Length: 318
Image 1 (cartoon, rainbow, N blue to C red):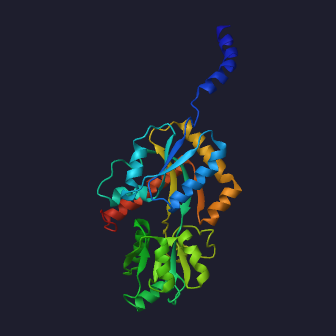
Image 2: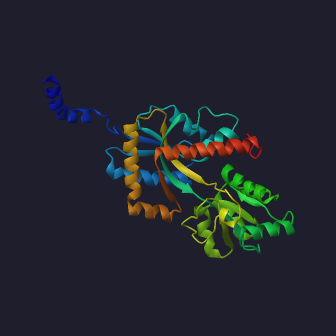
């Protein structure tokens, strides 16, 4: 009878237990963007915060804490309480940093909780209209016939690595030229001052209408919806070539699963809104939502890639 009485009382206790679970958010949420205002990650973060506002009792406030290749802002999040009220939106170089910087004050994987992958940043190879080739094999033939005629532009460590990795796979020497932004890089490609450049879809798209540049390859294993007719590097004969940027939503290590699930559900709801997705498309941003386990797997894969590249001497510490 005692056991039966306890079982009968259990349903009455469930609502109280449910009410006892911590609500999220209980106050405004800080979304730290460890990069400068106006960049792609900042634009995405602000658009997402705006899309989430109607469904949450408190706002998400975007804070730019740029500096040291994202380390300054990321450290703030790594040291914050894991209660869901401090989050960060980081790009793939968040993981790469430990292989290219002398030191960082946190572990980019162990000190964070992956909440969701947000977007994929496919890198594209833009070529000047002055070049006669339209694909990777044509690039290789031209480079062999015309030594020292080609160089490839990049804007950060990822695009630089992609350009140099392709050159290594093709057994070519193609010098890298560093640019401050994708806009500057594309201006020189269009003008014919720079033969080739690896940049984002968002940077390349506005210049295609000029007819003075073409996209000859994309860096990912699958084609991008922004340029569905452009084949991947893999499709053009370079196996296992799959390098791209991404933006992930992370929290401090130790975030409770229940709060992670609430944040993820809110993000999923925002990305399901067609108006929001249309806004991202107009900005050249490709949604790529993934669960925490998949996000962690992507970060771990990134870590292995850069560890191997560092060991082979393909990237150097600064």
